[in-house]
Amino acid sequence: MLQEEKKTSNISEIIRDVQSLYQFDSRPWVIGFSGGKDSTALLQIVFQALMGLLPEQRTKTVHVVSNDTLVEIPQVVALVNDSLNKIQAAATRLNLPFIVAQTTPTLEDTFFVNLIGRGYPSPNTRFRWCTERMKIDPTSKYIKDIVDQRGEVIILLGARKSESATRAQVLENHAIDGSSLRRHSRLPRCFVYTPIEDMSTQEVWAYLLQVASPWGGDNRALFRLYSQADGGECPLVIDTTTPSCGNSRFGCWVCTVVERDKAVEGFIDAGDQQLEPLLEFRNFLKDIRSRREWRERIRKNGQMFNQDGDEVWGPFTLEARKEILKTLLETQKKVSYELISTNELLFIQKLWQQGGKSLDGPTADTNHSVSHILRKVKGDRKMASWQDLLSGEEDEILKQICAKYDLKPDLLERLRAAEEKVAHLNRRDNIFNDIDDILEDAVPTTNYLELSTQVKS
Image (cartoon, rainbow, N blue to C red; front, side, top):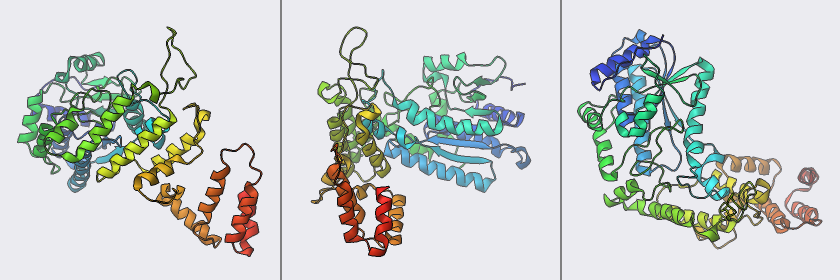
């Protein structure tokens, strides 16, 4: 039997309903936390509800899950990370069964790997390739793992009917008669609970500003953030029915789905000039999407014409992707934080080298262009080295190999340069002679034969 449905905007009644549903069964809870006003109000209510229960009544785990797309507005990232740390610390101190987790897209699904590596055009309303890869999939995987372990799960969201008529209709469509739960539209064995759905925006703010955060958060700072950005909350997205970030909502700073990023513009108008380079880059991405010369004449599926016989626009060309990467790295120099990771750069180079083999463009890059662009933007004189792109773990592995075989530090770079010199040739007869010469010069005689054999194999 499911919990009987009760609709209210009275905080005390909502807290009692939360306590009742929490004790009703053993299904674990997952709270979607984006750091915005609605999810903060939701989590604060659940916190209060569990604090009002006896320790022996707190029988099941509550997962607080936040999603980081890796291209969130920096101010929002700082606020969310600070909140997550305080939430976990307070839960531990108060002996509350909370687990705080943050999901992120896989390396191959990040925004820049797809935009620059695969050449996906800047997202728009008709081709919003980013939402599923960066938001839905990472969080869904986390939830599915819990379902696999526990059978069913209840997801708590800060969705409210007053957000929009569309959102109100979505909430009604998935309702279960006589229950405060709804079936999830996409995830099997998952139910959705929206305890603050009948609260108005004014009621949410009144609650946050009048009731102190139980984990020590600063709700007035959150209010100021909204005031500066003229923005709304970008909700935790777990299916395609959840409203996307748009208009003035806090969301990804690279978002080109909307005409203007009012949130970032608001921060800049409020005095945060460091966001100007990000806004310029975002506007650059929106502009180049509609430039025919920046796009391939064939789509990834091989299509050249649509059903009406008109030419189609494919992914960004390789040259366009190089220019986008160069502009991004130049933007990164202007700000005080990382915009694209080393692992993303490595993966992008891998995709470029595959070229047409991966159906991401007809041209393969054999010139290690990522390294060249990186070194050019850094302003160094000498040619780029692939070692500039190594992660800490990879660099450590190479150091261990060099130590094991008593190798000079520059040996692998010389081997790479020899390979790069013939990478574009169909016949590479002399490559092993070149490798032999390099190894004979650099490796002690006792280790040379063994290492040479391994390289050739």
